[in-house]
Length: 239
Length: 246
Image: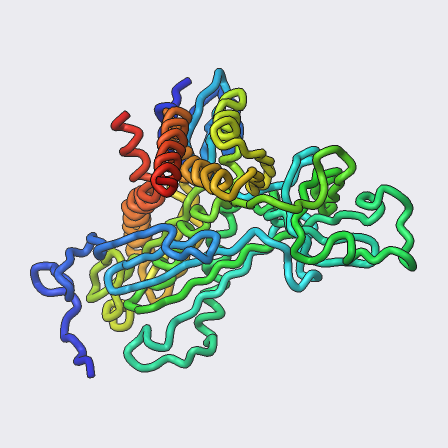
């Protein structure tokens, strides 16, 4: 039962990855006892499962995912939210107000207007219905400050790192709060703009070099170097 | 302006541009050339210069065109006014509308349409310079652009033509051979699945000639397929070398 690629090799759609009793995992499919890749990415063989970590993909909603979206339209009893997916999501007024919604009294544009960013969870989604969002959980709701960066959605696990190693390093070194939207949108909130810039720089680097190894170490190194540079600059300006 | 050549193939079996009967024109492929599109590709196939861009999957507009069980694929093949020797009107011609349909149908089998119901994907193909066999080059480029955009595909689609010029079956016809030759057989296929997605014939061929032509085109497709895969990987190769250093 052979496999046809080395682990971590780049494959393209249509490449035969394995033959025989293998299971097609992510971005792979099985036909006539052969496992093929369906996206450009890096192969991984785990036991009998063949996965391709895509180098580029788009977000497909899943129930329970935390995402960051932009309000695109204020409707009669809710908002339309762009979540960087093939489908636009709905956020209901009742859900945001946490009480009965009265069209005569409440002005929805006062609560959330076009262009506002929200952290939300996907409450429901299936093939026949557009996703519904909810903000009825602590930590969700309108974003008031911080900076947004967009990465390819498949790279979010890389930003988190093994058991959260990558994300905790960035948080530690920059002192920023980071909220990861699984749709590839990341919110960074820090005490100063410099802190935020530093965190954004690290995330951008991860996005560009996600398919290389030893990245966590390089990110740590980069963050420390940048920080010491800044210290020097500060000292110079003082003297 | 252009004089009609007396013979398309000389006594030694060399064609007008110096190729042998079974040889392809020089090919250059590039992926991710446009930053505003979700996926893009550029192909230079002989003197053909073609850009392909992909947008989507996204919400269907107008809404009533949405399909409840699968994605809608839209394709526009367009030739720039300066792509041919005599200015071509930029309005879509009968030929362009037909080619749009032909290209769409040849790409459709490669896509997992049923994964994303109620969505739409747009493919735009812009021919900047035409020199025979644009439909084949367009399919090759469009498939690359699709793969670049991250749409799941069963396989890449490659296309190549074979035909008959001066009573000889030749691979990859160029403009003169296409116009003065007696037959043209474009073939699009998914090489790894060994499936043909487009087969057309224009002109007159005997049964045997047809079979030779089709086999020749399939061989051509397989050669282009190798280059297509390399082009896709080339986008990430810079980073791959870095990995090797570590």
